[in-house]
Length: 531
Image 1: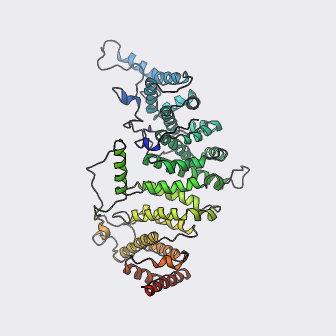
Image 2: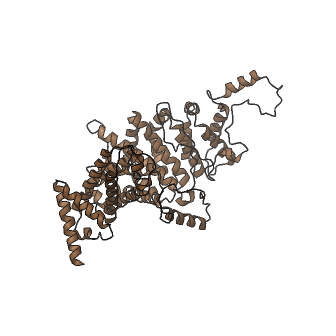
Image 3: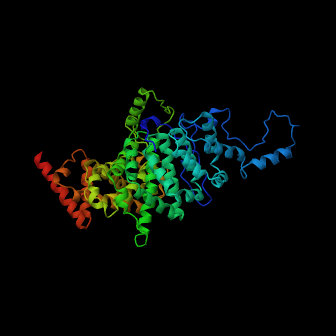
């Protein structure tokens, strides 16, 4: 399998993923959509006059003589060549597969074959087309073509086509039954081509989607191959560490989340069975992957100012940069001069899911201290995102999940005190407290904190409960701080918030709160004495 020395930054555009139609019982991720406008990933139909895949053989053009054939004959010819109830041509698909099979070695993908393969890629959104492909041993042909080629564009097209096919459980069943094919897909992670890697990450993700619907054997087969193929987790981490493409980082994080969740579930359920799996921590708890998850998340969570700087660099490198100049800031009260963190909220939950899986491992307790500073930096970034207008209040299910996962992750770390983390967490807690004091149930006019215009449907008890959880987490941060000097450096935090926090600690009858109050008071007294 080639290891192309291609700059990962070169493919920072859209991926060109063809949409995959989920089966009636399963739903695939929303990004299972082909983006045909990317210069690298555009389909062959984009290079022709029409962007529509070829119809079944026998369809007349509007310019044809209507007397050439009667309508019934045309319909019969169309039905005979159509794939199921679609208008896609069976003959075209099979001829394209035949052309691919006749290529002994594809060093450079020809334009004609590329165009035809891209059209089949487009067609593979249809479950009926996938069925036709499977009936004609398409997986074996695709994997054979990949193993015999060095062309990255061919890799991208065939892996993208395979990803669409993986929407059907039957395809995944055939694919995962062959360990050599899985190993080939794992080895492809070493190819440094952004567009191809985006398709590969989605193949990983789509396969694991089926595990949650009862296809556990898929995860077992992949788990065994991940364990047997040395460096598989490190390769995923390397992608996260080296790529500057947001599209690839997003796809990789989602794929890793799906893989870790499925494999962790399988290991737990098979703990007492005859299936002897290599320990999960040995396979996935590696430095490259852990560091990569944290560093890639921080990059995706960079603010608009940092993104603008990246755009300037991209322009200097001669890359096209698209900006929506008409986009308006919908956040009420947000200062336009302040850098704003804009991020897909799904990315935040994906990171929290990955981090939760890793820190809850018993084997991780000793090693997680190494990654604790990076993890806390990521959690701090999430808090900064929540403190932006309209992100925290009204408190909904999404925000509650963030805070709950954040508290759980911190509880699994032996040490997680950082000034910025404490400062932002204290700000979140104080806003919840203020909202509780101003809360009037069912009265939207009295719930205008942070400028929200919608009525707050969340009950007051919900705010009280989350405020209490954060207060306990703040107390735990103080108690776990390594030394008093760390706590002293709080001079830039609003004094009123510190007083409110101290009062809340004193009001709680609990050993943890008493220790936290004692530590904070001692630190502030020493700071005052030094002044």
